[in-house]
Length: 108
Image (cartoon, rainbow, N blue to C red):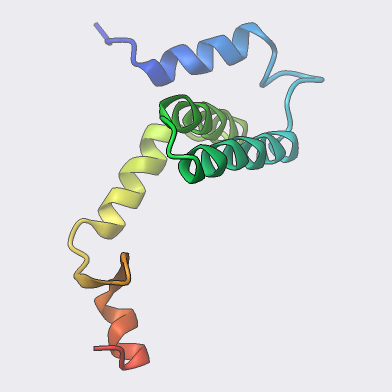
């Protein structure tokens, strides 16, 4: 028996509202929506406000974008984690810089 995840619920919500069907959402429209949600996140970070809703909204939109491309967001996340899991580097001015970039730019 498969346990329903929050991502399954998001995709079902999208399916129930024809996000993925004829005349439904497009990747382009969802990309614009992602930008809108990013702006809300940026505003709340700048104001020192809670960002829970903004982050969640962005994950919902990214889940729809993945589905519109025939992908599962879980697989996208796993793919990205596998890219970074062994990554080495250091923080400079609050940003993580990959070791390979440090070596390429001689920023040691």
